[in-house]
Length: 114
Image (cartoon, rainbow, N blue to C red; front, side, top):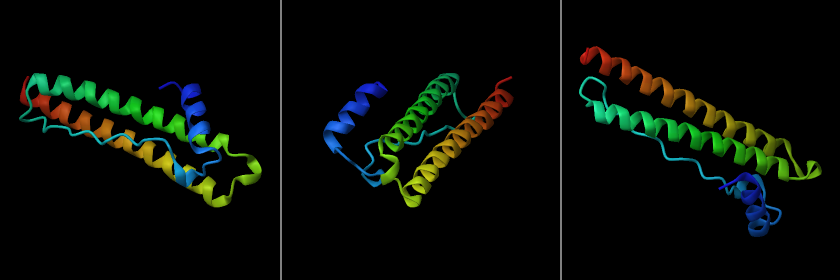
């Protein structure tokens, strides 16, 4: 869904929703097969899945940024700002962990299948 459409939908659905009423869906974590035993097809499919997961996390971060920006400044609290930062940082950490895990298994795959 595009961000302007999402914002319009959020506004109509939630009105003055707070950060705790988040409409942004956190993507499901990806499963990465062990590189030593994975097939080429599994590694290729996992690569595509990881790329989609990273794109979904990027969309999630844009969504929570838009949610936060939609709240009037006078209604923002230190707690809501801290929650936004915590959610954003968790998504960044998940992106880094998924990329690192896939790269580790890809190296293991390449070592097992020279």
